[in-house]
Amino acid sequence: MNQPQCKTFSDLHRAWANVLDMCAGTKVSPVDCWNHPGKTERTSPTLGAFPEHYDFAIGIVEDKPVFIGDKLWNIPNNFKFTVTGADLWGENPRIIGGDRCGRVEDCSWSPPKPKTIMVELLVEDVKYYADEYPMLLVEIEKIQERRREACRKALDELGKSK
Image (tube, rainbow, N blue to C red; front, side, top):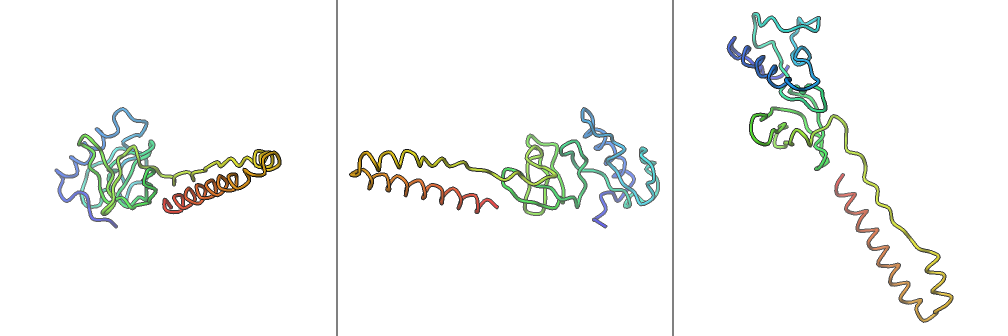
C-alpha cells in the first residue's frame, strides 16, 4: 500500500473537496476518484474511521482518474513513469513521478505512437541521368550518398528517442 494520503479527518475532507473540484467540468465522476478497502459500490465516501485507508485520485488524464502508483507516459519525451504526486493548482499543472514529471496535457495512459519517416528515392531520375549524361554519374552517386546519410541520421535520431 502507498503512503497514506490522509492522516486526520481534516485531511480526509480536504482530499474529498479537492476531488470534487478536480472533477468539476470533466467527464469523470467523483465516485470513481476514491478507493477504500471496504468499497463495494460506486458511491460517495462516508469519510468515516481510518482516514489513512482512503486513496483519492490526484489528477485526471484522458478522462480517467490518476492515483498514486499508476503508470503514465510522458508523450513528448517518450518515457514511462510511476505517479508519485501532482501539482495541479499552479499555472502549469503537472503529474509527478519521482524525479520526472509531465504537464497533465502531455501525459497519456498509452505509449506514444512510433514515428515514421518517409524517404523518397528517385530511382528513375538516377537511371535517366546516368544514361543521358554519363559524366554526371559521379554527381548522382554523391546525391545518393547524401540521401543515404540523411536516412542514417534520421534512423539514429529515432533510435535515441526510444
